[in-house]
Length: 270
Image 1 (cartoon, rainbow, N blue to C red):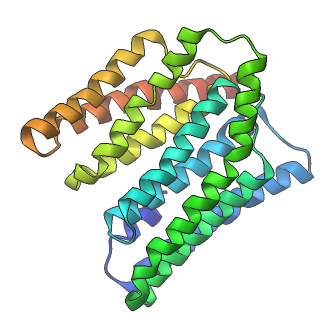
Image 2: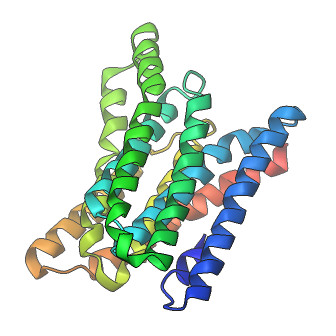
Image 3: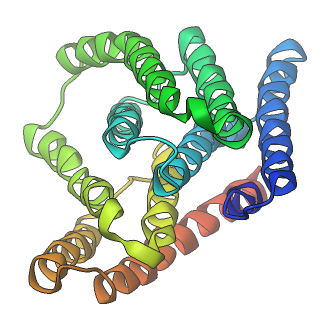
């Protein structure tokens, strides 16, 4: 994802075309991977964990970049990623009950397709760039529509399985960290890439929830501290810098390195 996203920052049309080509290649290979796995019945445990994560990383990275470049309005991007956060959390609580449904695959395809259309419109037809928000609004509507089966299955699993109330509430408290990253993103300035990296690593670690609990009790304090530090720094200095550096360090260590270790253990054992 870094290369096609970086190409969007270049002014030349050829760079935008290259970004579209690379992004399309990523989307097509992602679709082909899932299609071949189902048709050939070659599903793997690691693939089942990472396939939904890859989609979320793609969508989060692209649409946050598009909002930073002023291609689309940020509130719509916020709603889009908020949906992904809620569904990711529900799936981490009941991974077996909330497997990927067919409409969700269609949703991801449309998200990728509309991202390409928005880039194309702003590159080749700038006079129609005002239509980008309408396109994104359609994507947001479809995304929430596709989440209905997850909400239904989640409510069904919640009432049919014994769940410790405190553990349930503590799981939802983990949303404070990614939500703070989303809220602070428009004010991150030249360090805009840090919230994007942190959110992607959040999704990555969340995708491994089947193997290991997403947040251990001792870890929650660090994430809470990082989020609170960002809010405090913005209120005091009206800009973000030191808190974002702290977020990056914590995210790379707690989510990045630990997730890589889990992946290594899965590959080694299987």
